[in-house]
Image (cartoon, rainbow, N blue to C red; front, side, top):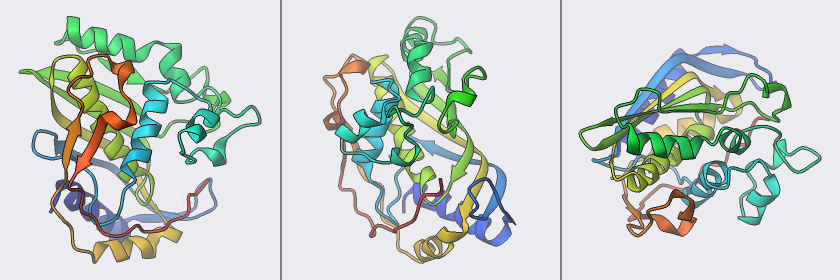
Length: 261
């Protein structure tokens, strides 16, 4: 049984049993818990759920849209066959000054890679998508908004800080995406992927996801798949969705859930 399933299902069960129930901006009530941490060792396994299907390639494409293409244009994502941002697209086809816009604005990937190569013991290796000056011009203010990076004994560690975590839909995607990002950044900086800490400030389950997640809690989990990354890639901007894949990803069927906008 994979660590992704063990930790995720334990948190889901905790929220369903002990979460605080109330309404929120979407109009769909949630149960929530405060301040939860999921921890993974990327040397041991790749964290992706097996108790339901997680669309790995879709997650990778969205990740590259944000960090490689550094785009806020939903139409580019649609050209890649991904429609997860359609609900938030503005009239100009973008999501405003959000996500990839912030990566490009502050040249954050370039600064991170340079810092990890030239000052690995620096304590300021941070990417932040939370720009106070631009929040009002974002279609959706970023949920997974900050990563903090650390190098120890040749391993690259990362903490993802997430202000808001939709356990049914968002968290399985985010966990997978940022594990991939750590592998990518590690490879282009000559490091090995290490520890991945995923902090969720508001871990919640929407009321219309309760039954789907209760079904997932009853399912058998499988061992984690093997992660493959193209060893020939040395420039982060050369990565494509085909340069990463899962080997022997055995999983239970998809669980349909509606996104809360």
